[in-house]
Image (cartoon, rainbow, N blue to C red; front, side):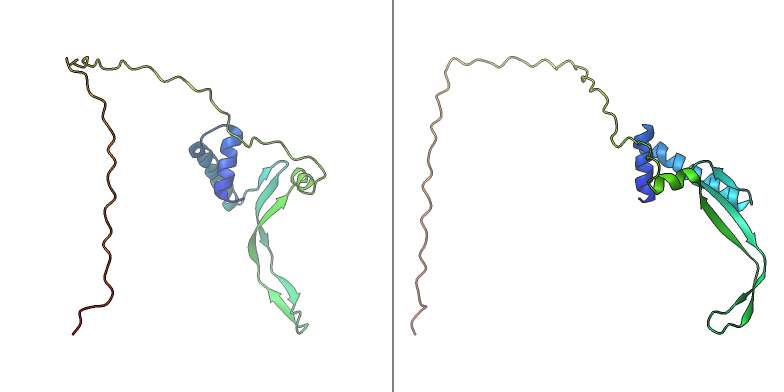
Length: 151
């Protein structure tokens, strides 16, 4: 599922238009990113924990040669799936039901507009004779002569 699909699914499930759903999803992501960038932990209970973690310098081994090397300190982003998410993802618990169709609003009848008054057609003394359908004759085909001019 891509971000666009997520926005559409949230809009349908929450019964809001896609523009509002997009603002909500974008806002949620922005708040999580800004909070984690400050160094705070964001814990959405039952879903995931987002944090910025500092790893100290340490000694490690080069697996090819077995030589000891120094690994520098670094900061990493860490996302941990929590128990509620894991149990649903692994099939231990049932997934929540979501709406997959937008509710259909009852159709409102269109307001009736007053039709402009038309002048009554003039009646003539003569009755119109019924038109006869004339068949057109098919045009004759020209037959091309074989050969050209003789020299």
